[in-house]
Image 1 (cartoon, helix red, strand yellow):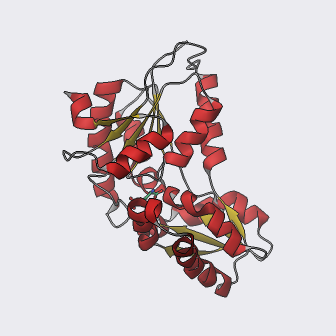
Image 2 (cartoon, protein in one colour):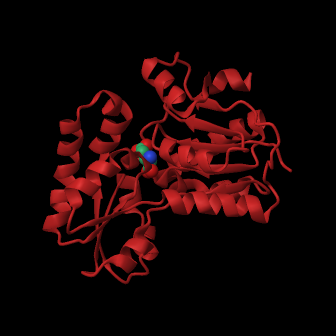
Length: 267
Ligand code: DGL
């Protein structure tokens, strides 16, 4: 039995759907969520810069929370930093998030797969490697959609959500793709709109189930399960010194976690 917490992290709210799915399936585990609002967005940054941000952040997290597992619920951070994190923090389990290109490539009849993600993720050669070079990839960077979800999603209308998604599904349709991968965790908040706008000719793929199953299998195979131990309080951690505004309070409430500034937790 291992009562230490599992930590989910992202640059902002993108990891929330991943964290929520894990919490629902694993009610015994104490889970914290970290939103790195101070360094948001990661997408326009260089790989080395993202790796340095993640390394410094994980130093703090490990000291303050001693987690048994960290789920990087962010494609950009995973692609830029996970190898470095695994090298530095030996003995700590890291689960990464990468675009679900392989299942999309397998399902594609046209051999043309779309990936929508951040500029950093689209620029990374791993996208093509994940597909086993077996299909043609149309990659689109959508920084405006990352910004839209993180900053305006909660206050946006259904029309605004549809409009921003339609802009991209039209581009994919023009490119002749029949499978589109949501390669940025933020875009999970628009999954319903993607599915509606993409139907009937384009299928949408994401990594929520795959990432969750990987985390669960690591807990099982390394005897890391909490197994009925009383659950600790879950924290929604925020980087940066400024007080959390109402929108952060409501995201913490959405997960049922206690909003806490990371700097306060580290004191
Ligand atoms: N949610 C992140 C991802 O999956 C990126 C958002 C950002 O640019 O910070 O890539």
